[in-house]
Length: 225
Image (cartoon, rainbow, N blue to C red; front, side):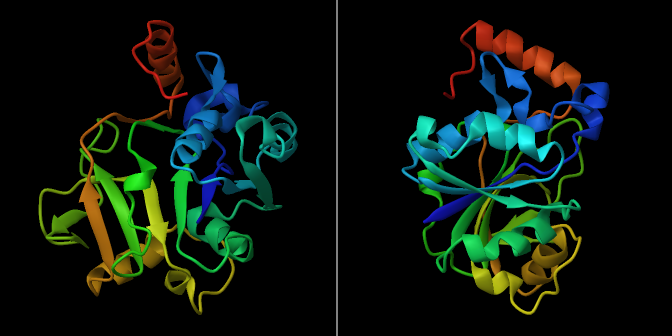
């Protein structure tokens, strides 16, 4: 199984911090944000990783390299123009093999065990939901049994973690589009399964988030690497 780490975002909510440094290379403790995602995959014995890059791409490629120092193999999908989540995954499909593949974001800190994801989703994808954080109080999707739902409340937040079949992207034209553009129609037809994870999950979106988690890391309250 292969995996993709989404690392092409601009990190606008970080303000001037990301003007010269890509968000995945901001540090929590002594580690770059993206290293937490790499470590999560390595612990799940997933060693073939694709990283999409755009904003300050060369910095990420230079500092993260080919993955050998992490015990994994990393290749890069470069986006001259940022393609958003859906467009970025579609462009990277030829690098992701033929089997279902995991996608996660470079700016999420979580203790969700990626080995728990179904290797063969019962549908086009299986996604992880989490309780709504303060910055996203309305959530994204509900749960109806094993399926993601657009009707059942309460709604939860998409955790930026999931496993996808190539068929979700079949007949989709290349371009700039969010992953939700594909997920929502598939959810309506009950082709997306989901689960609720209530353990540690944080999206590092602002400078305040960085300050909080740097303090937590130094206090040994967060141990992901």
